[in-house]
Image (tube, rainbow over all chains, first blue to last red; front, side, top):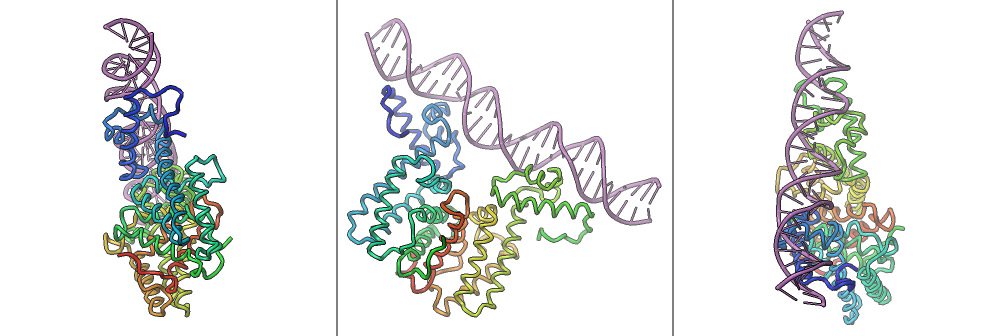
Length: 200
Length: 200
DNA sequence: GAACATACGGAGTTGACGTTCCGTTTGTCA
DNA sequence: TGACAAACGGAACGTCAACTCCGTATGTTC
């Protein structure tokens, strides 16, 4: 809704260029600093005045939202592509690994995932909806094949990935600790691992 | 180190009382608002001036540290008590459930866990050390019994619990979602669930 | 190439919040 | 009960970061 040029009047050439510069800079700065990233720093990095940043994105939240939508877009693609994978478990696993990589590359996305409402609450973006539907399909297939525990539900995924996202932050034992985290979670999600029904 | 009255000169009666009021208020406010909790709000809740808060805890960080130490103390106790549980898996599980309950009750602790250095780095508090040692013992026993996967290591625990802590925040599907999270992680940590060696 | 809307830059404003300071109050001890 | 240190309250301060404003510059159109 915010990423493509809304076709009311075509954007002036310099404006279009600057919009991209700001997005690129924001991506870089949020990746490094997470939600502590500062608007001035983003402007500096984009070689643009703060005013210009605010002309394109009226608030910091709007800028974050644009980046999150961007990541969701890519994740939704990953979920769609997973259909090509014949093994239902590998398909499921593959989407989560792709998601974790995105989180590891971008602290900002990982943090805003923490406060993201579910698809049912609030008005989700198209990307969010696509991701939700794609993921549901992948999970349903894996459950039908008896490889994913039957009591896992779609809303568990952002919750679990949010946890994995935490492990992508700085002060952990090793850079790859998020990989350990996701491996453990994936093992816990396999049907044979279930030792009881999940609560509620 | 900061919690008991350091026996240089005994604290005046009103000072001792106010210290407790501040701690109680801080516990309540951090539990609700996490690290966004404001010093003024803590003072208000303790029915005390801000100045008084600062006389007892020189900075906000010091106050947080006191509360974290407090939680670690209780967790270390839980790890010690786990020795009484004859089933090595139940002992392990029990400590993590106790830890998750603490995190669920206190957003602040859950957030500061995210930035807590390991015992090896930095000067850990006594409580942290006790917790580390107790947990190591519990894990060693579970590994020796072949119920905990052998490639799990002590540093995985804060990482995983930190993830569970995320699930204790507000906007999740159900209030008990952190219980689902921990259940999945625990299933992933059982020896038979391991489908491969954890990375690194 | 002139006229005009669109966009730019960045100094300045605003609000939030941790922390300090100091005049006043209160517990303690002789 | 008087004297004094210890402790209190809360207005004021300083900092930091999001956001605004407006004089200037630059694409676009005819």
